[in-house]
Image (tube, rainbow, N blue to C red; front, side, top):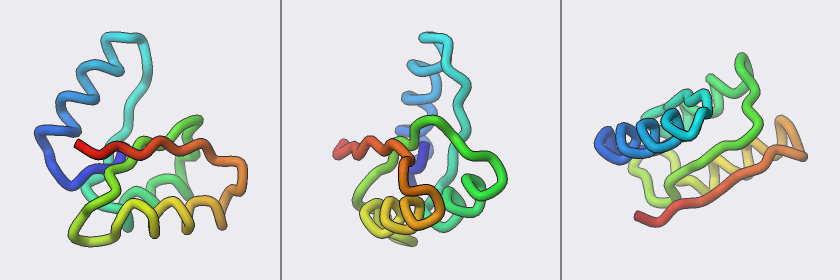
Length: 76
């Protein structure tokens, strides 16, 4: 999951791990893309409005790396 707010990442991590999912997190799109290159994921949840790299730009870059990547945008 990619979100620039630590509290949002913590809440989502807690919910997803309780549901039995393995979760990795990144504090911005640049970190998320670098992490994905080394550790591809089945699903990427990203915030859209972030200060470092916006979610839409991150999604486009991830889709260039892996066109079939599934993404979910959150607007919290």
